[in-house]
Image 1 (tube, one colour):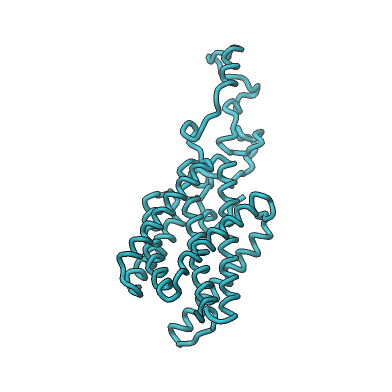
Image 2 (tube, rainbow, N blue to C red):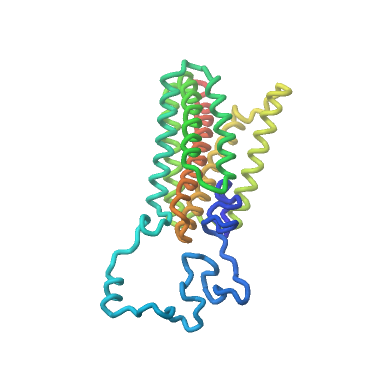
Length: 303
């Protein structure tokens, strides 16, 4: 099953298409294929190395294992990620931590280095990060350097923007961070306990709402820049509703991330793909943080 996550769903991500390792493309082998009788299809991690032997025996010239050798193999510890090269949950946690630490460090640099309400550099960093994010999403191969560069640029932009907001509404930065952490924890608990299931119907509805939300924001941006018209989507009661929908969409994207990561690990995705998982989680968390920052600003508008 191909992931519906915007980062993981493109061709080549967590798939075996075009020779790129991953998951989600269990295709039925054609008749006559040596994998035709394999219940795992053409998954290289589920193939029997002797599948082309009609009797399922070892090739000639290879000695049979003794009872002592079989016992030693049984008692040996299971292969870890260093031995198998497969992606594990620990890999995802470690790469995500590195990405978020880079983002926070760059945000701290902008906070202390830039003067209040100086958004020139922040805007430039944000635009470059946006372009870089698109490039990373559509690259067939994973580039940790590009992912960390994206995190640094995005963190620098968010640090400057957060400082401006915090100057107007003191303490909003801490509130936004705590709110983002609360949404992440709630979604993780809901997903792990089965209260949220990433089904095709759930995914279709969420993606449709997300596309409508982005389109509405683009229309509002164009209207405000070109015609000077404000649709009121970022202020007042309507702004609060839009903010809540934005945070809800960020939580939805997190659930897609969790499902994609779980599927990648189950299908033996390469260890390098943990960087792509970290990038997807970072995108979702940045989305939630920005929407949380805007929502709190609206709620505190009269302070």
